Image: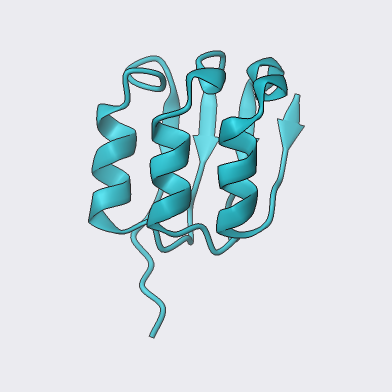
Length: 88
């Protein structure tokens, strides 16, 4: 399954929803996800089935990136991609 969700609040909602356990690919590129969304994803026990997490072109910042990299629910089996993007 593949899902796209808009904005930080969408990432938070996905992270808190037990139905997200069915997801294998979570594509959140270009969705204005910021640190709160990244933290919610990193701390979600519902996302342990993910195989890929796409977060390019979001403003997750260093804190969000570090939380995702250290997540016991996502790392190390998730192929995660993100790129630092600061809104100016």
